[in-house]
Length: 281
Ligand code: C2E
Ligand code: MG
Ligand code: MG
Ligand code: MG
Image (tube, rainbow, N blue to C red; front, side, top):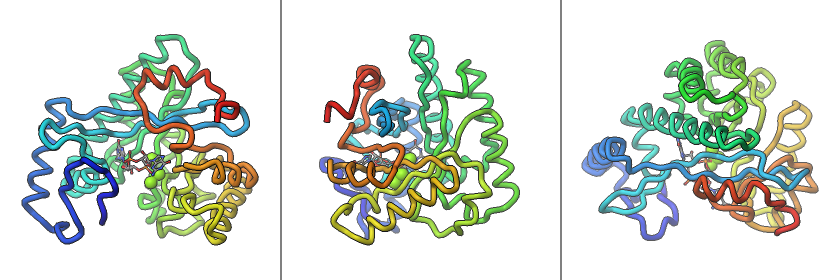
């Protein structure tokens, strides 16, 4: 696994260090301290509606500023947190923090838009419907503020209990999105069985359009299939005007990516809300 091109960040792992027990132990204890010392914070990336050119929601993304090591990417620490189980506390902190932000935005009088929170497989099966209910009640926010992004991995065993968890969430008017769509191994049959509102086309299929005909075919087919099954579809990782033009032609509903905005602070989100992204790109 590659830690990505996070220049300037301290890389705990390279491919051959992946098994390093010391590195993992270090990271685990550093993450515990990070929770205590409030080294984590959230940034928010706009999701833009292609029909209106307006922000329709945001995705909350976790950031970690370590006092000595500097910025550490979630691509490095989330997998370790998942292995050690610490992801439960981290995901709960993220849900709480995102709901507190929603409450602040709600109180400021702006119209609700969804804040999408990423949930790991462990958190999904850790009484998530009850946690969602408690978070909404605790912060007194309307469910229109919340969306949860889950990944295909959670749906691999498309069991009745997974469907039940999802239905207990959507019954509270919190919507579900399927993240990194196309990278998992699960059968397509879950798409019609599960109460998922939105499919998020993984960035790996977006990266090489429009030059790669295979990726163009995959992206168009996902969009077509999503429409036929009455799901909304969003493309993640859109970086270029050419990718955007292709996605508009293919009938994609929403896009998210550096072309429009990197993940930013809550204050910056407010200033982007009035913007029409069509006319300003
Ligand atoms: P994800 O949920 O698929 O998030 C999308 C990732 O793509 C984010 O990386 C985002 O910053 C990045 N991205 C967005 N637009 C572009 C673009 O145009 N170009 C490029 N190159 N990248 C773009 P990030 O923030 O590093 O997060 C990576 C992954 O870490 C996320 O993938 C998600 O799986 C996980 N993650 C992040 N925050 C959380 C969290 O709060 N809880 C959990 N459980 N996982 C999280
Ligand atoms: Mg996501
Ligand atoms: Mg994704
Ligand atoms: Mg992804």
